[in-house]
Length: 484
Image: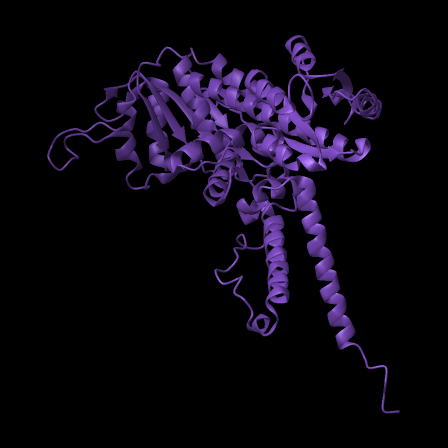
């Protein structure tokens, strides 16, 4: 653990020699406080902030189990690792079920088992703390109806947009698809004097060319089939805000009529007066489109009175975790899934992905993962192949993967059972590691095992595999005798 991240821990053991020895070994990695029994430990916790407790289970005055119960009830953010002798393993397992992070056995190897167990307990505590902080920030943003971001670049763009919320001049939002242009437009509307009036969003790229004018500007009585005039989307936004997404997709005739609305506040034809604040968005530079003849130059100038550019997600990596947490909670609620967090390896993959589709792609990836997840955590195999780097969908064991081979029935029961158990161990461990991206801690958690026990099982499986491979190699090798 880095010096900047150095954690304070509390060591509780009634054996003075062991307590001193452990403290001397652990002080290289942690700030260590010690207590000789449960009451002393609880007294220290009441006045001193610690991140983890290393707790002996067999103590006088107050048992380790009682101390653990008090800690879990009063200091839920403090992780506990318990110590127990080999004869007390049942008590250690019961402690883990009661909320301890894990256990180590006495006599202990302070530099290995204890230090690693404490470090991992603290790592989990900090990860959960960061996740809670993210959720609180997301909840705060959602309550305020604001854009979810911690990026300085995005915050600057957001502040610039909100800074002109009170004016009536057109606002142009530039940025790639999925960068949150409509969210910013809605926030500007909510912060401005038109907040109580309609906000009408129009995807200009989805308007059929032949119907664009009618949809936007309506039609007069002489043009309609029943002789009655009908207002369009612009009139629906009267006194409010009109958001024109991908405005450059409008056909030339609609561009000319939009310019009339912007310059004279009227819909040409009858004419009809209209009072709207126009916010437009584009993925491309309007001036370049005007130079290429795809957009009226005067419209480009009028729309671009105030321009705000939103950065893509690849330029604000600090927002990936924040947005992923937001999408996780939303998708879990939507689909009724009990998925609560993103595993460390999956979080790394999310952080390293380029996100060409920006926040929309991230939301889609998280929704895919929430639906695919088998447990409380999103793992690498749950992410879509484009993010996880897998060439295909997550592998799933076939239903008959553990069908008993016929040849085992020719063996004595004890030998057949031993070989069947070995085969099960290999399949189970292999599939679990594949699903968790070789994350031992996560695999052990899903298996319901202590990490050290799962590691031993993994080593046993690996050694059996090596023995089998060696046997096949020996059997297939050339005979020592020959027909000279």
